[in-house]
Picture 1 (cartoon, one colour):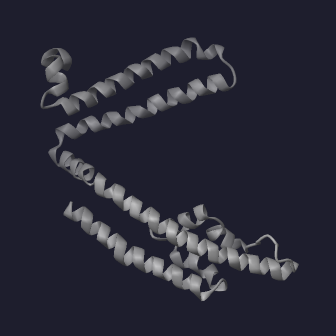
Picture 2 (picture 1 turned 180 degrees about the vertical axis):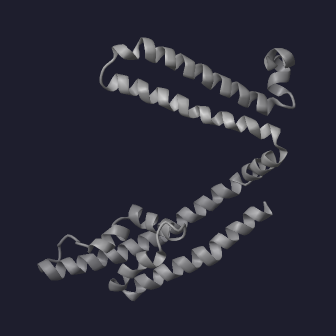
Picture 3 (picture 1 turned 135 degrees about the vertical axis):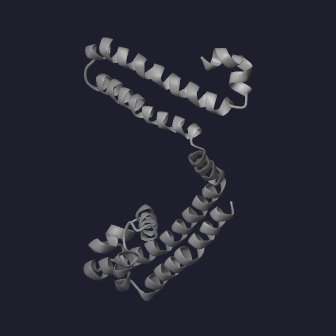
Length: 205
């Protein structure tokens, strides 16, 4: 109805073009959902195994996308619209913040993983008596610092209340004081410096 009321140019380029496009996407998703429902009833019943499962997953995804309809309420509430626009305006800062945090996680993650790996190799050499022995880490060290990926996740959880940073640091006391100091420097740098700077950037934006 909007398309016929505003015309092609007014619908796509008018002052409300953004909301018109959003409504168009919502209607298109509803049409896709209806088509998938018909497809599931007529064809999916004849399929078996992985083909039928794929159809069911696609149908569930289409139904899940109906949740985006709630965003249509935004245009009717100015305070909510202002809040969402403020969040959207910080996306650029958010992306650079994520880049900075990933660099931080990776840098300290590599250092701590290497210290733990050297310690575990030393334990294996003492146990086996072979300088080529495969590092064998204790359970607590393996849980937090067994790989770069695990180390980065541990560092991420440590500053987002996923885990207590002291819980991740305690096993490092058996490794070396350097490992403990590295963890303390990371916590100090991330919590008291970077996160506060990031908060200031968002407030300024």
